[in-house]
Image 1: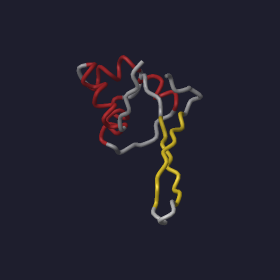
Image 2: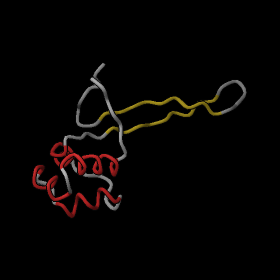
Image 3: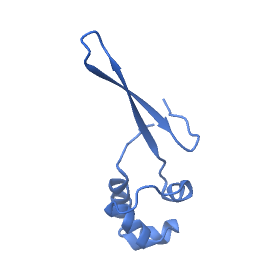
Length: 90
């Protein structure tokens, strides 16, 4: 199974395209068209888990741990934390 990561506005834009418009997406998901528009334009940033589930999305938060190597330069190690209790598929 492939995993695609999107920014929220990009994910909403893709869903709008798939459904043929924002009102059609709202009708099929039960999420208010005005709220979808705000998510699409980046005016809203943190939809509820129920809203994400209705849209067929889940939130993936990324954290970076900063460590120092021998030359005292920053080295970044990336960890992904999945919300909603779902495990990453391999």
